[in-house]
Length: 313
Image 1 (cartoon, rainbow, N blue to C red):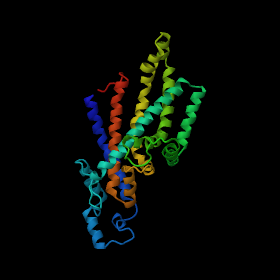
Image 2 (cartoon, one colour):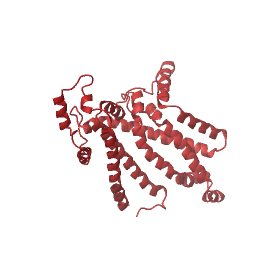
Image 3 (tube, rainbow, N blue to C red):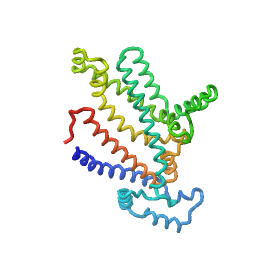
Image 4 (cartoon, helix red, strand yellow):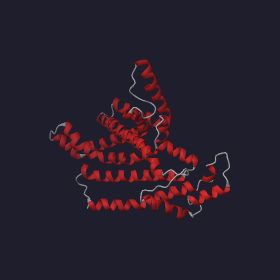
């Protein structure tokens, strides 16, 4: 197991270098001069602009700029903005908001997706199964902007004014963990639909396996057949999907954070792209890549727990 972890960590290095280099090239290839954009409608003095380009290394070749950036990342230095603020300090509080939102969405996705998928698989072909599948189509079809504003209206306005229930905050983070319930569901909406269908398909295939029929024929209780054999052996593709989806949820939080006024990394990323704060944009992507790599490593290690036949030499 130890050798496997070390090997995976070594394999993550070229992935990190390749992905950050690509986004670095993409960001710096955008049209416009980031120094001149700082002045907005006012023109920056050419002498000051030249000093800023020299200070931030914008006159260096692209490969030199990338080397200076990535060498700093390995010691925890993500650079600084044009206002002199360290990018790492800028991330400190805002990444916490985004991580809370993404983890809340992942928990909601796992509970609702696995639950509805299991329910549909056990009632395949019946009206309950068709109702669940229709619900997944609705979740996939409705854009995040629409579902976000609808839930804000229903849960934040109608529920409060007509029934006096004020449990679901719809803006800001002042209510603690409750502030992330509605935006977490909105963020996880599409992923829930995919997970329901994946759970349903995986469990239905497992229930048709020979060893399941043998267990039922021997008189094993239905709950034990489902829990110990069928569901456990169906979890590997589901855990794989959930692990990969964590990075997707964090990356897709831009719209959700804007709708619910959450001061997370999504809003910061949007503002940084508009202002051409290249160090911030590349830093956000770098952290998302790290989260994705760590999540996939954890998923791979869980394989041995879910299926004892899998062993890491």
